[in-house]
Length: 111
Image (cartoon, one colour):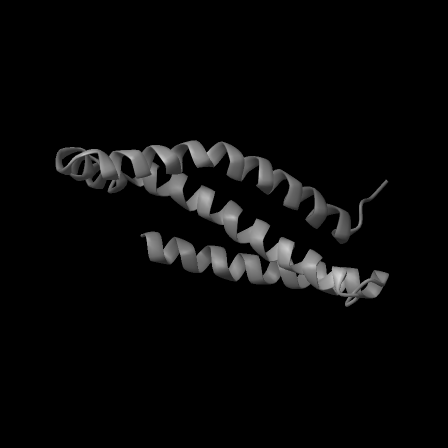
C-alpha cells in the first residue's frame, strides 16, 4: 500500500510536534543558562558557536517551522478551504515546498 502525500504530511506534522516537545529541553536549558549569570551567558555563547549545537538548534527550529506551516494549513482547512482531495494534495505540496525554503533560510541564518 502506498500512502498519499496528504498522509505523509499529516504523519510528519505529528512527528514534528513530538520532536518539538523533546527539543524544548534544549531551548529551556539555553534560556536558563542565558539568564543565570553573565558568566553562564558567556559560556552559552561559546557553546552555541559549536557546529554540533548549531545543528541541534537548526533541527529544533526546522521542526518548529514545519509544524507551524502544517498547523496553518489545518487552520485554513477548518475555514473550509482545500477540503477536497485535490485541495489537500495542493495544500500538502505547499506545506512541503514552503517548509523546505524556510528551513534552508533558517540554516543560512544560523550559520
